[in-house]
Structure formats: C-alpha cells, structure tokens
Length: 210
Length: 110
Image (cartoon, each protein chain N blue to C red):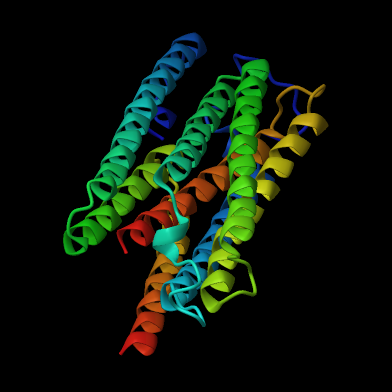
C-alpha cells in the first residue's frame, strides 16, 4: 500500500498507522523519542526530589505542604486522564475509517487539554502572588517550576500539534499519509498523561504527605 | 494484532470480524480507564486520610506504577504485536531514569 492511495471503509487496512514504510519509520522513531523523553523527565524528577523544600529561609518561605491543595490537583488529574480516554476513542474511530468522529473526539481531547492548561496557569499565578514561590525564590522553586512547567510545555506543544493536524487535514479525510500522523500525536498525548501520573504522585501527593 | 491472521477469503467477513475485534478492544480500554480513575481516587483518598507517611508514600508510588502500566499497555497499545522495539526503547529509558533518581537521592541525602 502507498500513502496516496484512495481508500474506502472496505479497503482501509487493520493497522493504518503501520501500513506504509514511512509510517513504520515514524512509529519506530517516535518510540525512540519517547524513550529519550523518559530519561529527560526522570532527570527533572531526580532534581526535584533532591531539592524539594530546599529554601534559603525555612520558616518563612512556603514549603510543598503549604502550597499544594488536593481539590485543584484532583480536577487537573481528572481532566488529563479523561483526555487520554477521548484520544483513545479518536484512534478507535481512525481505525474504523470514521474521519468525522475521529475529529470530534480529537476536538474533545483538545478542550480537556486546554482546561488542564488553564488550571495550571491559575495555579502558578496563585503560588507566585499568594506565597511568593517563584522560579528564582529558592532551589525548591526552580526545581518545581522546571519539572511541572516542562510538563505544561509538553501539554501546550501537544495541543498545538493536534490542532495543527486537525486544521491541516480538515478537508482531506483519512488516508495512509495522515493516519500515522494522528496516531503518533495520540501516542504523544498519552505519554504526557503518563508523566502527569508521576507528577501528581511524586510532586503533589507526596508533597502533601510531607 | 490478532486480527492480522484472519483470512477467510471473504473480505466482508474479515471486515466484520475486525470491527467486532476493535469494538471489543475499545470496551477493554473503557474498563482500564475506569480502573485508572479508581486507582487515582484511592491514591488521593490515601493522602486525604493523613495516615503514616511510611505507608502512604510507597503505597501511592505503587499505584502510580500500576496506572502507568495500564496507560502503556492499553492506551498506547504496547500489548499489541510489533511492539518489541518500543518496549526496548521505553524500558531502557525507564532503567536509565530510575538509576538517575537513585543516584541523585543517594548523592544528595547520604
């Protein structure tokens, strides 16, 4: 099969994300990239764990247990987790050659992602203004904003990526040229969720435990 | 994927089989999503109850690992065939990552 082929519901392959050479290469290369991303985030996690609550003026500066609140983290977690499910639905529709339904689920994914990002902006703003917890206020602040901010940056990039794909392919319909692109973008979105699972556990929940 | 082996010589039958298969898989996805939500709730509840940190911290880390396995194997399809190289890449990354965390913790705290 080649990328430009016009396909129908009947002739659409079982694994459109791996049915051309370009798609296979994309698939392999993207997983290699995700392996690298794992190392990147692990080093940021290691830095955060080593510098957690390291402030120059203990007693005055806010520590993890003063900053974090369960309800906000919980809502953010639910938004991102649900967006992971909706992007699974999008890929389900992609495999069934249902272009419109795929776009609908991707759209919902983007909205949930935007909600998550909005909460994060509110949260950072809150820390800076209420607690004077900034990037330069302490080693704790630098480590926290680098780790969580890097994740937020990934969310932003993922949203821009999915939106660009949706706009670029809005009038094209599904083919073997763009199906792997959608698939890879959804893998990236799941990976962002995987990282968030560790962030809400290691940063927020462990921060509140003390 | 299991459905690659099916070849009855009748494309219509194969197609229906594939659609049924993927609908079935989608049901598993929803089940694993419910489990993930449940694990998240348990983790948040464990912290909200303010028990001993010696129990809570290892417990929520364990829950996080279980949840990530669900994400990787169901949502990211690592349970499907043809994911040998992705597994190698991801587990190497995870291995290096865990060593990094261990190194930082021991260097800084010991």
